Length: 367
Image (cartoon, rainbow, N blue to C red):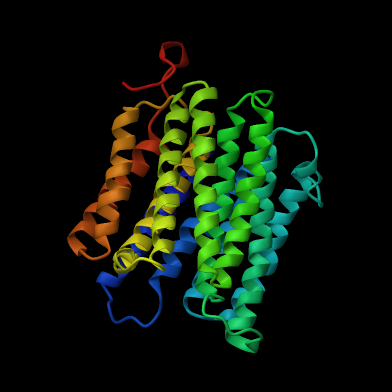
């Protein structure tokens, strides 16, 4: 990946987390810094890297640049609540991602129903989900701020905007399944693809309609699916530095699934309900900066593995930042600053560390 792309991605990743703590600097600001926090990570950085991976060897820098410019404008328009502009910017973003999807796959996702490597199915699903998500957000904007076709508490714009993290989850899963032999445990790989994709779609529907019991059931089902993928990947994939990061990412994903179950359990348990705000904050941070970031790191380095850093020290720094410093930083300005600093060190090491000479590198570089 070109150095300029890496620098821009690193800057956006750091600025995204920083906006998650902007409320400490402007507590009375009427707009939601959370939107910038989510958009800069998911749509700007995540979307650009999904586009980069989807194009494969067809390196068209102008497409990446155009995506970043339109996505930043989209994020700012949604932040300042200029929703007509947000809707208008959906068109060029959709054209860019659909052009890449059709060129790399097909207009209709026939691969979902054919015998092709499961990682390709996840990759196509990622791009398709991002494309559909852009237009679902348009419908949510029209309903929430213009026409009010349906009045439902969970049918809010911010709920739909959070959906932009799912394409990154799918691209990360494609990286995981790409490291599995496609002939090994093929039925289990196929089952994982359909259970995760359909499970999340159904789960989202249950959230919208506030079907608490069904939410709890499907969230437990998704937890079992995640544990299945973790076991499959841990057992079948060859051990490399990339596998270490992806295993760590799956560990974060298990935590997001558990916190999701506990948060929904608050509908029925008073003790869990009282910790609901802290639980959902932890869930969000671990999902973005634990699970999704692990996949983005692999994309950013591409073939630059093994990297010249202590793998386990870097992973430990990510866990410290994501599980302790960042969640507590939402209530403590001092810990917010510390978490941004440790996160910046993490991003800097992973993205910009030089590559070890392959002839001298063991399977897992931990120098």
